[in-house]
Length: 188
Image (tube, rainbow, N blue to C red; front, side, top):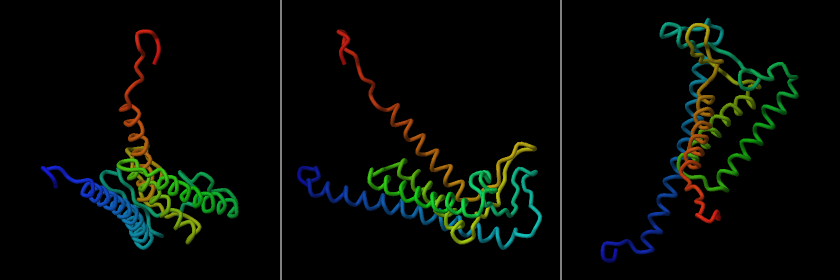
């Protein structure tokens, strides 16, 4: 430090450390999300399969084992096994790789990077189910009375949270941009 100010070398070193910490946080978020999803699916398989659904908090939360052969809300579950494999295993795997490559190439930082990490981690964990089982283990359902969600899992929560973070971060970034001012003569 010179006169209380960091030198260019010190600034570069700090920036490098921040980049590595940021990358570490993203790796922990991805591995933590996949690990949590895998553990909860294992517990659901061992404790809920072949058992009646369990209801908690005045039937607000239901836990029950479901093998989802389709996509979101079981869309495509009635497709032939070959078509399901192409769509839900092949295409999803390619999409996950593409999103990961784009996120790395575009050097996403901050909330958008965390959102993409959660999205990819949730998608990857469900993709692992499809590769290993041909279906995804779902086990949670929430709602009040007849208004209920579909059956979902921790990976689905990560996907939805990640997507919402990316959208909100994008909206926030768009609204934070300075508007183009028009001069009194009508030019920009």
